[in-house]
Length: 95
Image 1 (cartoon, one colour):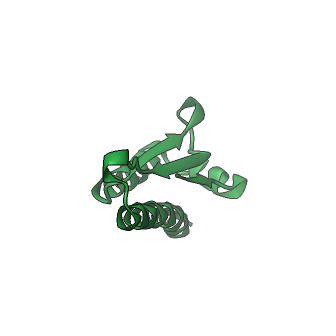
Image 2 (tube, helix red, strand yellow; image 1 turned 90 degrees about the vertical axis):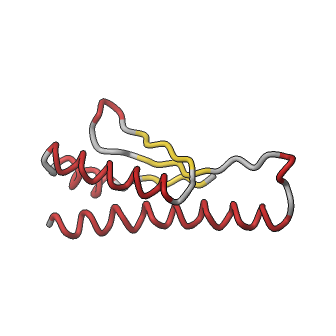
């Protein structure tokens, strides 16, 4: 599991985005994380801008092997890095 906190500066920039632009961006993020095959949760109090994300995968005991552990770790790490990149690139393009 990987937790990502959104900085106050980024939260402020997201709150300044139009409602539709924010929704469009968040849906793009959700769909891309789904395509990566990871589980995720967005901490978004009161429907405002997200203050944090959690990216994870479940490894069941039947599937437990060293290779699967490394594969799952890599997928979660890539998902977390994608969230960070996505937030930064989205806010850079909105000004």
